[in-house]
Image 1 (spheres, one colour):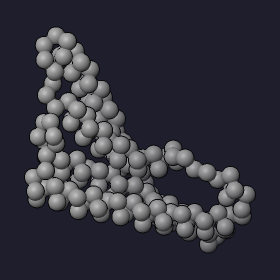
Image 2 (cartoon, rainbow, N blue to C red; image 1 turned 45 degrees about the vertical axis):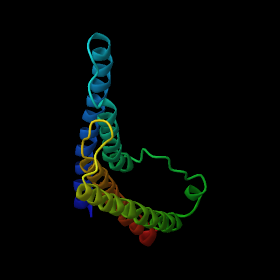
Image 3 (cartoon, rainbow, N blue to C red; image 1 turned 90 degrees about the vertical axis):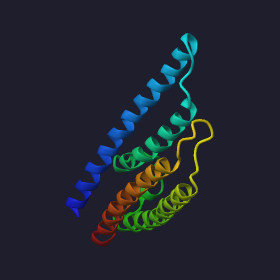
Amino acid sequence: MAIFDRIVSSVTRFFDRIAQVGVAVMMLLVVGNIVLRVVWKPIFGTYDYVEFIGATLVSFALAYCAVQKGHIFVELVVARFPERVQGIIGSITNILSLGIFGLIAWQCLVFAGDAWQVGETSMGALVPIYPCIYGVALGIALLCLVILVDIGKSLVKAVSG
């Protein structure tokens, strides 16, 4: 389990770095568009590109945020329970989360496949949208792996108490 945890942590860290580069690219694109709008003409499709980069980078950063426990976690009541009860509650919560995010990842894959088949593009730049949706599905799938690791940790905590 520890090896799987390290692999998942490394992969999520790598995707977080990609998300960080995406933020820089998005910033440069917006600033470049503003500057070029003043001196010449704007970059065609900036809105679409920023939209695609933003959606993808948020999904890529989600899993690493979950590994680092950077999300909002309310344990005001749960922290007062014994270790075993905390483990049981954590297991149930993580199993429900895995179900929800697994469903989201699956539906993103279905939507991306449909968008690919019909040739759906963005409104402005006419760029295909399916690569971005596949990227979001990948980011959510990574989050599912993190949740799976957390399920294992919660079950160990519930059993060993």
